[in-house]
Picture 1 (tube, helix red, strand yellow):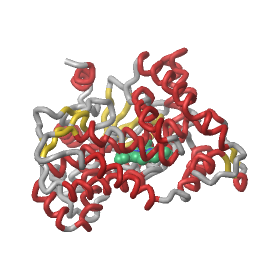
Picture 2 (cartoon, helix red, strand yellow):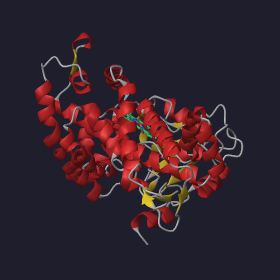
Picture 3 (tube, protein in one colour):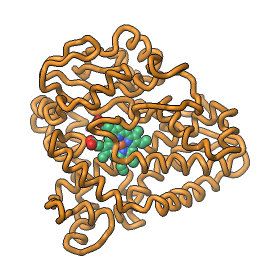
Picture 4 (cartoon, helix red, strand yellow):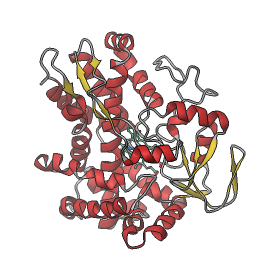
Length: 402
Ligand code: HEM
């Protein structure tokens, strides 16, 4: 039995199980918030309660990092650095950095990026002939989000794949359950980012260019000028980790949802206006990020009737909240006609996802290209493999054929 399964057995409320939804539903029926021993934190499963947590400024990410630093000592230096990273900032400092990134994003040409995405997806998927089986993750999902992130960041094409491959260790160090190994692995990964991105940053400082990296470096009208360390964190965490990992998982889950719902797939193929609704339902039904980063309560609070003491850490289990029967009819069914579909997969609160347009764009382009190229989609359960990875969910290998 691998380590993740053991963790799950010890902590039935942790994500990471091959099919966690039955456990989530049973837990939610008992209470919308539970204490979990393994990660030593509260897990909130209800929709209303998760939304409340996402919007409550009395939870601190910085305090949670302080707890990790105290726990891991010398190996905790990645958490010290993460204090400069947007998802781990609080209050005014967080709001200012969010605004800066949102403003820098405004200059992104999403249509041009969609075309870049479409060309890449067409190139990879058109390599499949007849009904030969293929692994969608290896063929497309592993590389596409990294290529899109690198295109945005101005990485030379010859280095784009190499950069994307360095992401995993950094992502693992951001999980809910931390070990000495993940703590030191994350630190090493950050050094690697410096190797690729410091030259790009230096080339742009004072260069008057108008690309995304240049817009992130400074904003004189707001008196913002970021250090190399801040920029490396934004690049590694907010662009690569945030997008490469989650969008990769989203792509696999989209294809799996379609292959396991052939009638829905045919509806989407014949009416492409349904693509957007299909992506939203995939995001609700099986979200790539099953839980949020943890926060720590700065005061005694009550959620779902449970007293959360100042200093306790908390996360929202989005995967459970998205199937809360108080909000969604037939929550376990994949139904693309849901309207509205108020899923929480992009955390609509203080830390709402800054890349949701990029994520939706890549998902929609991939689904459209699949519809163009595959008149039917079938999957091979025995040869496909789920990723077992803390708060993320999706496929490590997804074997498909026509
Ligand atoms: C399917 C793909 C994606 C999903 C499911 C997803 C999900 C999320 C979630 C749940 C959060 C909240 C995290 C928390 O509160 O702990 C978040 C935050 C964030 N996401 Fe995404 N994300 C996706 C893609 C992206 C992409 C493509 C980017 C950027 C290129 C991105 C950048 C960010 C950033 C910067 C934050 C932090 C915002 C803040 O703390 O204020 N994400 N995302």
